[in-house]
Amino acid sequence: MSGYFAALSAAELLGELAEQNPDLVLLTQDLSMASFAARFPDRYVDVGITEQNLIGVAAGLAHAGKLPFVVAMAPFVSMRGFEQIRDDCAYNRNNVKILAPFAGLEAGPWGATHHAMEDIALMRSIPGMTVLSPADPNECLRAVRAAAAVNGPVYMRLGFLTPIDGYDAEFQIGQAVSLRPGGDVTIIATGGCVSTALAASDTLKADGVSAAVLNMHTLKPLDHAAVERAARGTGRIVTVEEHSIIGGLGGAVAEVIAELGVGRLARVGIRDVFCTEVEPYPELLRIHGLDAAAVHAAARKLMK
Image 1 (cartoon, rainbow, N blue to C red):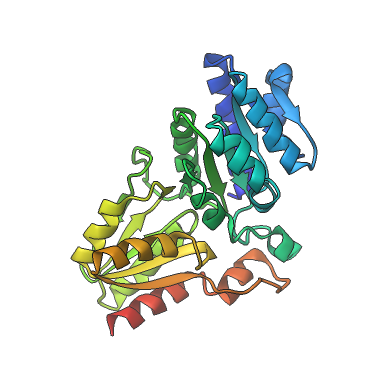
Image 2 (cartoon, helix red, strand yellow):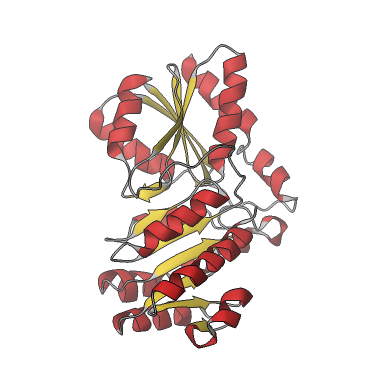
């Protein structure tokens, strides 16, 4: 399921939440949320491709007591709308929720201008911002419910999400979910990369390596206790994210490990380059070392 379809599903859920909360409104930048619009035409606003205005309008509605949910493409809302998210939403503690599909390289051959590989770093740096990155479509819906209950701004990135069989853990903001135990190495992943981490854990098991998998669905506030348990437990951590290795999940985990002075870390993510290849999405993941084989290799290297 693409991030966009996850957002569509979230919009269906927002329709249910809107029945319960007359203050809930939905805003977008040319991403049609048709079912919500048909159901609540006077609570739906499409401002067109004007992200700064989109966030400004949302902040104004929040300031007036509304509960705005914004659905907008991750690369554009996080970068073009950054100042408005920082100043109008976070600085003024306005209760705006941003659902951002097309995270990471999901926009594929549309090119580097449409890739969101800096949004975690940007959003993590804003004081008071909650940053979520659910791992599968059902967790996305649980995350939306959790976001609605937060008193403050929330950014939720939605990349390509593969359903994880049997996964129905309660979504608690700031609490990572252990998906698989292991004694040799811990793979900490976020978003769609959680499925990749599980696949890598399977191939590592075939090599005789016991790899734990941790779903870090909340990037801020980060679950420091879970990272510390991994650092003191297996002592070896591999982070996996469809984001730059600078400032994202790997950077956040590195900060914790450095302060602890315990554990070794390998970061799997987009290196300090733009993705300029024009290839289908799965091929871009392979080229940029974001597939299960790359995670497997990083874990084996850390074992040496």
